[in-house]
Image (cartoon, rainbow, N blue to C red; front, side, top):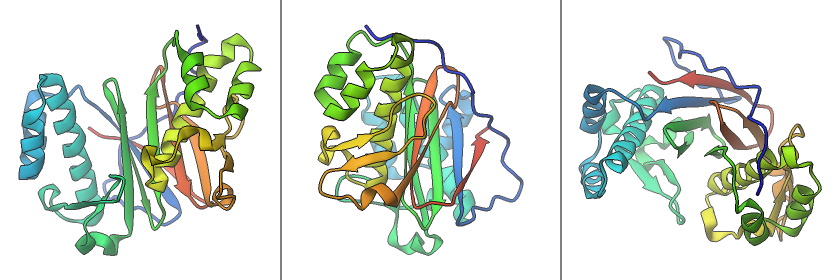
Length: 253
């Protein structure tokens, strides 16, 4: 069993400014809770498209309906602020592996975004003119973590994980997992690319980065990463195209 100490160095999130601007060298990360008042959930449901409302209604459990409604509604509200339109007017298109983008008629904004959620927390990441991905996981003891790593992580990553002290292994496991997921989401490939065909760093305290991508060595210099602690017992990683960006962390509601 892999266990470990609780995460430290929690990231500080602030209230958004009255005038919301996203520069080309900025990444904005928003944090939202799925614990929302019923009235606010109704307001978010009202900005969903007919297709999204139909999808929400198909969920069997109320918790899943709530999570989908809040997750997609908050995304629409934030995108509307950046673009300068009503949330209900936001339209999407999807890449070949399901990654969401703004519809072609909204492409003039050059806005890219990605979202992730775990437990009762959601993260939304935004950039201009560069691809972006974010992954979020709740850090907890994992009795089968080593078996999962052996199945999905690369040989290099497994050796690095096994070489660590027991107290560091749980964070290293989630460092690796969130970095891999964020990269696949940013690249738009999703799980079409097997997780063991590329290597990422995972040692706690070391810079997060790509180490190797099978058949695509240029990918190593194309992407940069940032791992952070958005809430107690949660770990997240950003994957961003290019270098020279800074991050602003914002709280929704």
